[in-house]
Amino acid sequence: MDHKKSLIWVLGSLTNIGIGICGLVSGYLAIMALLALFGQLPDKLAASFEVPVHLQKMNELYPVKNLHEDYYSAHIEVKDAKLEVLSSKKRWPQALVYLLAGIYVSLFFLILVKLSRVLKTFKTSHPFSWENVGHIRWIGALLVGLGLYEFLVSTVVARIFHDKFRVSNALMLEMPSFWDLNFVALFAGLVLLALSEVFKVGAGFQELESQTV
Amino acid sequence: MAIIVRLDVVLAQNKMSLTELSDRVGVNIKNLSLLKKGKVRAIRFSTLEAICRELDCKPGDILDYENDG
Image 1: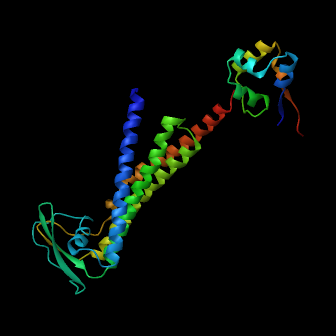
Image 2: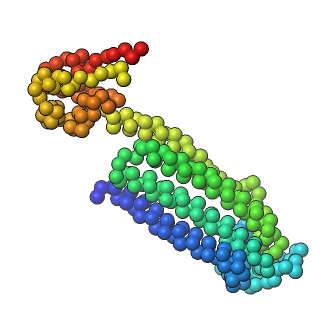
Image 3: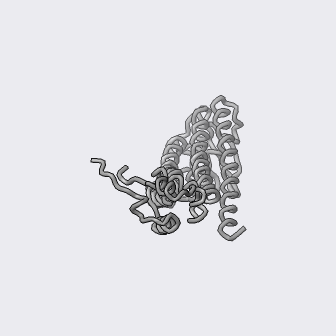
């Protein structure tokens, strides 16, 4: 096995592992969304998932604002910080968070599936094919979508859960700003969209080459 | 198609099979078959040269042009 083949094999294996992990996580999140919707989710678990969105370090007790009677508290541990989350008694916000997270992981899943198909063509045939043009264009569009989706979800989740966290020693939920946009994903997506055009030209040349005797 | 491939005619004149020509010019028989049927988009000068050498003909004997209009 030469150097190039080894690299493609390693990339292919990593992609397949990623697909497996993303598939499992998406399935887990879908089940959790359903459990939350039917009110079967344990309070601590329900609260824990609300936490990782736009967290900032705080050194002192963050006062509870606009505490609503629809919410009740649940204590959870996040790393070295203690967090008191005011978990919703309503079912839909929990289910929505799981659903949005599930869609987020599914986007990664789709990107990895497309990447795996591109890598397969490196092993079996020529990479400059019309299928790869489509796959690379999809990956680019999904990365742009991922960047925008992250921002959208952060905004939606922050709007839903803002002022519903009581934080001791560390964390609070904040509304995202323009600078919280995932510029790396957006840039990578645009680069891949441009690269798909290069592959389009390459696929044309490859087709001409294969039809030349 | 305006370009007509007359490889079958030249092959018949030389009493040579496509398989034999394929062996002599070193071009895949599948590709030569496609060339014979006129189902290719381009032909390399090297391939044309090898075919002309083996069939003792000129490119004009293999390729012809017909005006569609």
